[in-house]
Image (cartoon, rainbow, N blue to C red; front, side):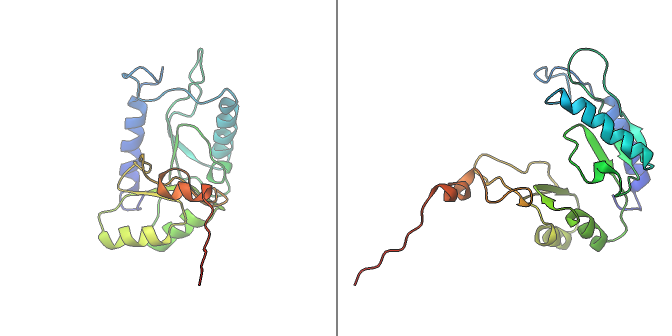
Length: 185
């Protein structure tokens, strides 16, 4: 988040996260369901404990929800240094990390610093920035001003260590085909 609106955004986003109901993912009144597996509970705890040790600010959530099931509070943390594990490992849980930036180049550097590149999201009102993000971010799926990065007929796949090639869409069929050139004179 740009440093000019960072504090206001973090507080507003955290307030929204604290208002979400967590429960049965099939119940429409809930905004968030459970984690995928019991192993994620320990992983979330370890990652967030490490983030706290590295100085991350907890603005919402951060704990397991007591009771049956694999439920975790929607969590918003800010001011997280790159040395924290959560900045280098996918949490596979309901955690939003919000850090400030001052210029476009630092955003691109941060977005591309890891050897992974499955998905990226960005929000901007500037058309030039939209084009630059699409060109410079190293990810197989990029949502700009949208959380929708996969639709039925679109290819799904990452870059770098997040996958080779694509599934789905017309591009996904290419891995199943053998291309051959035959000529006769």
